[in-house]
Length: 197
Image (tube, one colour):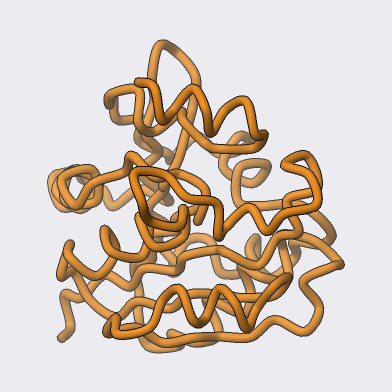
């Protein structure tokens, strides 16, 4: 699939702001948060899906049972987001375009992912990334062009994602989207609010 877009779903974090419970396993609408994100990634049918696990890995793996995706264990997840991003990218060495999703964003739908791909295909010249924006603020997921970002991504360390790299570049296309791209569940209060919405 030369036109395939890989999806890397980051679900390895410890979720310290959420409390002692495993954030990725917190239930929303009867399903774990990570299952919402993984179901969306698979349903988008864009290409291979890799889920990076770390904290509570065995339990999160069980929550993903039955889905057509690759599980990638990150033994260095405690060192920060950059290690998980690299693990996910390493799992797809042949895929030129990667959508990076976060496991705690349960309202992302396949249509969001398809819109990122469509915007990338329409851009000329090809941008470094397509980044969703809601009310003036950048959100997630993002589509990365590995050809233009390879060296920058390799330089990431600690608890850094691609956001810092993309903020410094001029070849990034922003795409206006709805509030789902800004909703991540970092706290118990955020989970309660999402359930009420």
